[in-house]
Image (cartoon, rainbow, N blue to C red):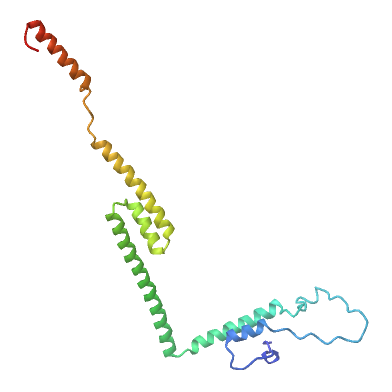
Amino acid sequence: MAFDWTKVEGYKEEMTPEEKLALLDNYNDPEPAPKNDPAPTPTPDPKNDPAPAPKGGMVSKAQFDKVSSELAAVKKQLRGKMTEDEAKELERQQHQEEMETELNNLRREKALAGYKASYLSQGYDEQLAEEAATAMVDGDMETVFAVMKKQSVNAEKAMRAKILKETPVPPASDDPNDEKKKQEEQKKLRGYFGLPT
């Protein structure tokens, strides 16, 4: 037995499956009118009633599954009835979306390569240049400034190491006081030999 859509308020014959689902979400199963009989209603036996009546206007799972499968079948039929022009248009749209995605990826890669080359030319090492370029492309300026700070510290360390390396080490025997001692010894020797000092 198929679901009777005519009982659902707002149903129209030309509705799409999505509209039918939305209508079903708002559907409340009409509750029977209360009887004037004051006798209590007996509790249903779960063995005899496998699908108890839904409470609070909710649709039972079995009924929902049945309607869902009907809607899936209707969707499948609609796809089958899609005209050749509609199918071509759908394919064209998918192809255009793929091209736009690829174009955006290529633009990102180009910008990344340009920024990285710029950072490398400024003396950044490979890892810092990559990190700064990626942050720049993503618009993450905090990371860009953090990388710039790291580069500044690294450049200062490298400069200090270079200066220390290039600074000549004075010879061990060159002592300014040692020269005075040599001159005094020469004067003494000249004096011993009677030469002018």
